[in-house]
Length: 174
Image 1 (spheres, helix red, strand yellow):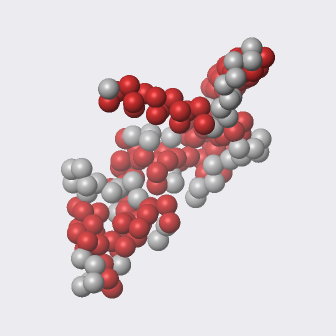
Image 2 (image 1 turned 180 degrees about the horizontal axis):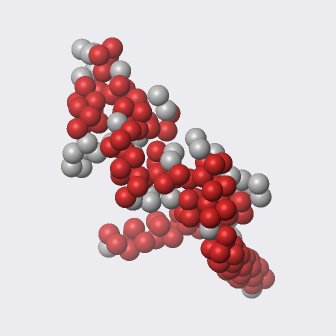
Image 3 (image 1 turned 45 degrees about the vertical axis):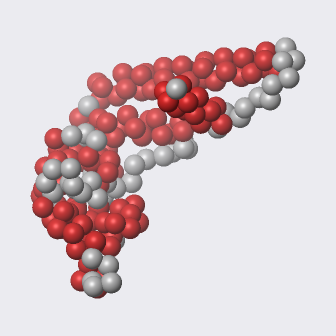
């Protein structure tokens, strides 16, 4: 069991123990086993454990799938490398994606794709510069607003996206 799968998926695997008090997990287990239509739970770690061939096939097709199931480095090493670069900025400088086989996949990618490493690093460097410029502009605008003495309370950076979302929702409803 994996806590990232949530209560619904984890309880589905335990349906024989939970019946008859809770009947929903049996339905969820059938949906996990069949993987048809909208009720496709192949993103779950539990699905990867019980149906590895089916989930691996989806991971090879779609670059988003491996991130859900923990197989990104082996199926899409270029994407994994780009995400490692980004997360080294956002989490910590020595961050790496730690999955089964990820060290070997990373080493093989670095060996065989040396020509693509510099452009990927340059792209990430430019993204970081744009991010810094945006933050500096936002800080300057906040400082100007405070200096102007408008009497409005400055919002924290954490509150701004929520405030914008609320404003957009109010406009949409009216």
